[in-house]
Image (cartoon, rainbow, N blue to C red):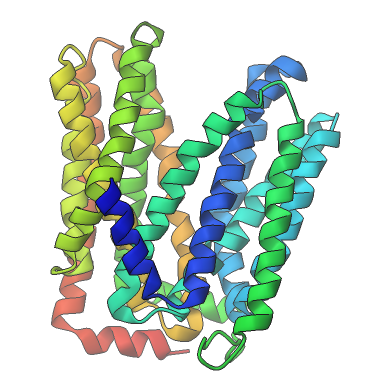
Length: 413
């Protein structure tokens, strides 16, 4: 672990100072988010007294809005600049969490959680685009590698802090999250005043209409194949949080906890070595390998009678997660035109349609086939995951055989 942090320190010191600020902001904002949001469902159900259906709908609206509004956030960042969009999202997000303390009506919680999803759709693609703006191509894989590490550390620390503060019963933890987001907004203002120089290359360029941006991205066949493939891989990732937990049930909650811990440990131990190895290969090659390992890991979930096989499966699953989610950002940074990076990262948010679809399909299979047909259930889910492979292959073929095609497509209007 000591060597791991030494590596992070060494890599970080070679980045633009703004990268360091964004990575730190990513860590504390994710920790703040996960300190409160995972407990919102319990708060709504047990403290506010809403039934499970209403609570689920309130929680779900955030993901729905975030998925379909991410394109708008990315496009705005290309048109109005990275900093204005991020600063706006941080301050509005802070107000959302203050609102959660004051809210008493169902419609208010719906509105606030929808706004939370909207702020996320503004901030995430814009921050990723800014990281690319200030990072040379040879260092981008390291940036996204450390960013993913920061996200996972924040996601691990946040719930533990929230649990210790009693977030499920104490809405004042929302205030702490609001303060964190407010501080992030202030830090972004400071960064804007300090780093708005020509070296950043982050000033707004030619102003495209939303319609013209959509047309350019839709014409990009490589990106289209990547996006379709990623819909299947995000659907695969959803199985860990949804189908697997239902399959194991409350009788095996300890096993499920062990698998979650194994997922986190695997990320911490293998993330940097795996990404270092994959630097030697094309991004779409890594994505193909990742989709295959995702599928193999999901198939292994059927063997719940063997703890060894389950742990091995979660390791394979996690390696697939590392490859698909880190290298995917690198691919976008490679193929997106400089003036449309925000829009590309925003459009990539559509891949999370797969997360909702994956959860629904898994639940449907459990309902129709029954809990005793694990091999069939996870076999079908594994095949669906493998459907990503040919789309990644199609994209790689285009890049390999006709590089000029992609360049012409990107710059057309």
